[in-house]
Length: 198
Image (tube, rainbow, N blue to C red):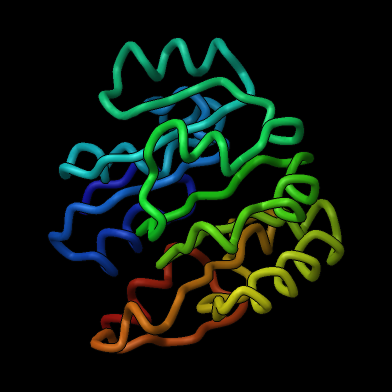
């Protein structure tokens, strides 16, 4: 299974959605193509498999590279000061989005607090909380927000050696009733699909 992600996010999305061509939202996309600039990309392989989507990064240089090599929409935006609902509406994003990659570092709390969850729903979310560097605050606040909006934490603490806990992964369970879901905790990202295949 092809992957350009740092932590197997795109592999797991491919596992969940099989051959479906979906729509992604990628916050903190980097340049969209480099495997290490800054930390890979979670949606490139999905685009290559026929997905559509919208990618956002605060760095205009990254977005200029993205637009050179990728087909889907991308924009350089400071998500802490923009109206996210207006942004998604501008690009005609569907109200139900298949995959949301959320990785915006120090902007995380400002953005998640004002995110329009009443207007947009996601089937699968990979959420970077950087517990290993930031402690529990971001992780716990995000858990409360996601839970209040109907999301279940599928994997608590996706680990990246040598750092430790970096992300939590969430789903809307109603979209995966025919999938044999395993709720996992404190697991190295490279071991997740093996757990699902056991």
